[in-house]
Amino acid sequence: MAAGKRGNVYVVVGMAGAGKTSFLERVATYLERSGKPPYIINLDPAAMRLPYDANIDIRDTVDYKSVMSEYCLGPNGAILTSANLFATRFDKVVSICDLRAQDYEYFFIDTPGQIEIFTWSASGIMITDMLSAHFRTTILFILDTPQCQNPQIFMSNMLQAVSVLYRSRLAVILVFNKIDVASHAPLVKLLSDMSLFQSELEGVSDFSSTLTQSLHLILQEFYEHLKIVGVSAATGSGVEEVISVLEDVGAG
Image 1 (spheres, rainbow, N blue to C red):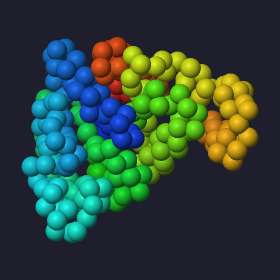
Image 2 (cartoon, helix red, strand yellow):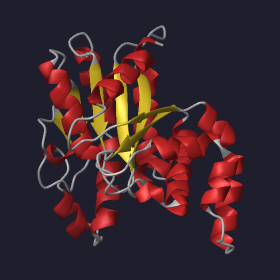
Image 3 (cartoon, one colour):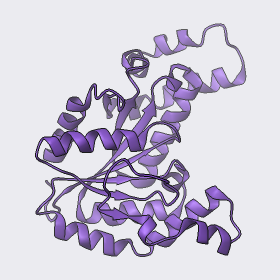
């Protein structure tokens, strides 16, 4: 562990519908049964119900519906504004986590489906900067494996992942979720085999196909440094491998 830092923080991000919260529920359950309960922070102010017990919950501090009414915002704008408001007090969250670091090995941050918070919003940068200044912090980028079978959708996710990496300057682990529905193995091969990726786009000569191929080539260096793991939040398949990867990162 880096000098002056203690505790391992994992920020769970990903496109809406990727299964971030269900993934976290599965991992939390596994760790609890292993005698290593995680410390969980929920940053989704619009969550109706959480399938896990959050140690710190943004909903206890910021009223999402009141923000929507007060600032005349739509749902997405209210979520981003709530995150920005909470970020101004996040130093208190960091202080609490620092005190709890002697009791917890794993700290998880559950985030809203609005990935814009971590790709261009000020709050995302504030939060990751404060966390990484005190703890070993890693981004867990959750992908919807069935959706990623489409090369263009897959590339859109990769662009979001590299955007998070660029903005946060933190290590990123790709977590392919829903592998009970579709295997992530072919997608892992696509990342390392340019010719295979091109063959997936054969017969398609539109602009999006050309752009997808070009972006894939540009991002090859990004792929080379990624840790990749597959999991099913629904069945629990792959969760042990996820924990093993987290342990490797935490010990690095």
